[in-house]
Length: 286
Image (cartoon, rainbow, N blue to C red; front, top):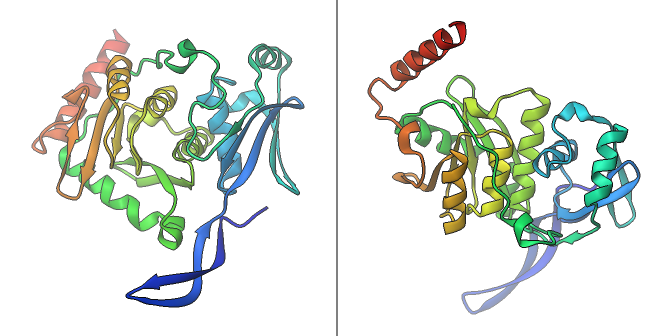
């Protein structure tokens, strides 16, 4: 398997002088996702955490409903790329045959191969419940991401998607040259760990476009925090999906675009959540 980071030679022109040296840059390779012997998609991405990518992409795309639907997964390195070969049950394979496409997705492509407007703006899954968080918790979660971005530290050229909970801090963090790939890898990581996304915060180091919201909704994320701004369509999609969308998150604060009820004042934040949990438990018992 290819290394995620490479060292390349380069020349630098600065301060009216030329110098030579080397720079660490992220690797980018073609990654084919195949199901039962047929190619479904070819994406350009970072050759790291590929099992997570296979599972997460499958879930985000609606190919499978659970990580358990993937009977087997083989990661095969070829001369010109990598194949993620998955085998599914016959009924799922038939569903794929009805919508199969063979595409080449450039870096950062989140809707590659979509062949209709209706499919591109399909309604996101509805997210209900989810924990409430105090502003200080969002700031704590955000600050915890940067130190763990190993590839970003080396290259300054990749995106990250992470998941944070009050009890465990950063549960999982994945990086990729494609922001959608990074989120898919996170989806796969959490799914395989049986971690419920509604219990914490999904953190993105990129802007929020509509497909990022669709993927977050598919994983059941109730709160999404991003360092960059969202698009207008992403805001509308997050609102209809029931997701609390926080963006333009910086060291000095953030902006809340949808469903602000999950962001509560620091005072009594945990107490309110505890009371809400107790009320919900009583409702289930009744």
